[in-house]
Image (cartoon, rainbow, N blue to C red; front, side, top):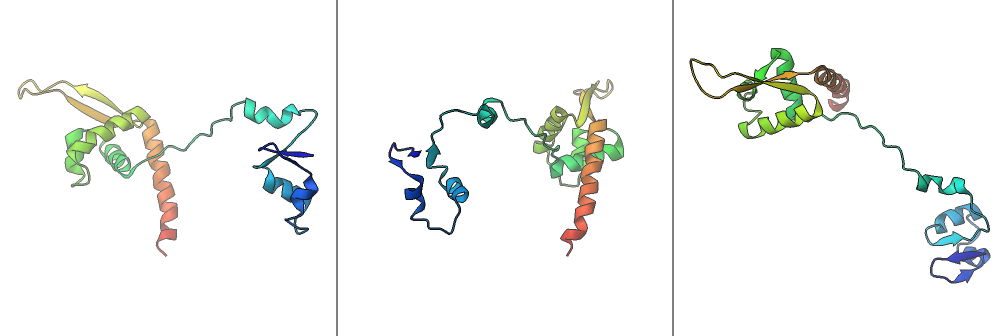
Length: 157
């Protein structure tokens, strides 16, 4: 005996008659499972354990935006740079308004580190922040460059 969620009872045969004999009983139960539930005298805990214990979280690969990739390329090439040096070296691909936001996000991800350099005494002014790539940043940039090189021939077609 099956019980529909709205409380009305029907025999399995009654549910299967309109569908016809083109599907087997398992297929019909699978199709009707969102609307019909089977009453059981005993409950198998193995069927509900996935709802009790949390699902393990899958690790996502590190993401690298185009701006982050550009910044890592320049930092790896020049070892360390200031924010405005990155803007001028990018030849217009980075803007003053976005470079520091991107650098902060990259530092949070562990791709780069920064340190404040004291202001030059002779010139005055504010201390500048110097950015350097981390070992993680170097590995991620190398992995993304290898993936892009591998995929590039496929997109050239």
